[in-house]
Amino acid sequence: MTAEELAALLTPKSILSVCTPEELTDLLSIASVCKMKSGEEVLAQGEEGNALVVVLQGVMRVSMIAPNGHEIVLDYAEPGAVLGEIAMLDGRPRTASATAMYAGRYLKVSRTATEGFIERHPKVALAMMRDLARRLRETDTTIESDRAFAAGPRLARFLKRLTEQKTAGHKLAGDLSQGELGNFVGMSRENINRQLASWSEQGVIELAHGKIRIIDSQYLASIAESAD
Image (tube, rainbow, N blue to C red; front, side, top):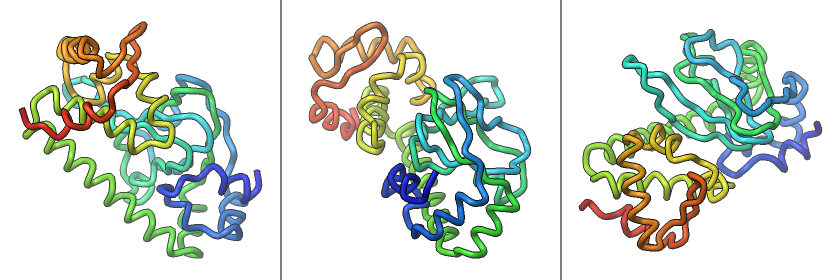
């Protein structure tokens, strides 16, 4: 892979989008390009954070197992996303797992190599800090949704997030099963099904074989902002 090919895969939101072609060439020289199969666990919660990964192709599902045994889906990482940097930075076990939803590729960079890369290119560290701040804001928004919004608006806000904040958001939201969406939103499958059925009758979404397709995104946005 060349620096030009890597740059073409990065979105403006990727922390690596600040890198010059020379810096990307440097990154590729210390990284390994790995293939992933659908369902493969690339990073495991609790393991040593001895490397970080950069999604090149495909989507990784980022999730964690809570103390009560329930799975919580934190995010869906698309090309350009950097994962595993928290454990790499603080030296503690990984806080979440990353599982391939589709076949694809990713870069893997060891802790030592990453630290050297950041020392040579300190602006990457600043971009990493900004990305961590973004994720902290999203966590705050999630807490706000859990405490301030009823089930309908909360579900609408998460669907809106999937369709607006992701490069391939519409496809991703459409590929999520109702059970998977429940793990992401933090609602029971029964409540998810009841709300989605209501929206389907109103023509806001379309349900087919357990998949979701958004039809009226403007109306969904208005629901997302409602506190009722």
